Length: 181
Figure 1 (cartoon, rainbow, N blue to C red):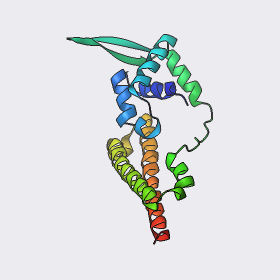
Figure 2 (figure 1 turned 135 degrees about the vertical axis):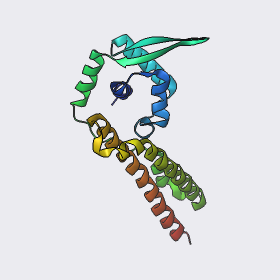
Figure 3 (figure 1 turned 60 degrees about the vertical axis):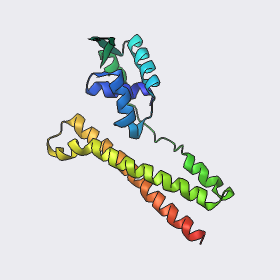
Figure 4 (figure 1 turned 180 degrees about the horizontal axis):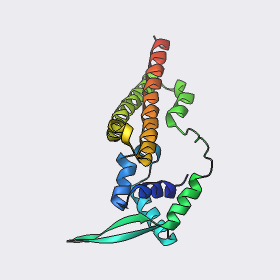
């Protein structure tokens, strides 16, 4: 999957400004599934516009640059649906904490424990953040349009991912603390 597919997917749901797309990556759906900086988003939107996959409407703003509201084009929909019809493979886990586990024996246990506790807290906070994204969908589960049902289901995957991290951190902390008694 490329950044462009994620941006096209956001725009397939509704037209958005570049700022709103970047916000989705920082705080919304993208915060669980794909990371991208504001610079990356704007650079990709420019490429997508040059390729004809998105278009924008410039909205005048008093004393500021025009606000660009991006929409996916027919070509963009085609590119996105072509990508959607291809099988996708699980992504390899690239995790610094995993590498820390390989070499954790080289530092005092308190260093590893401190990092796992810090990560546990981050994942606890992410569970709450992702659950907030799902509140509307969960409250209206029986009347969701298909596009919103899909969003609900993938957000549920994000919740489970974060909860699994919390459970693993709890397990790891217990095992390490038991081993160093």
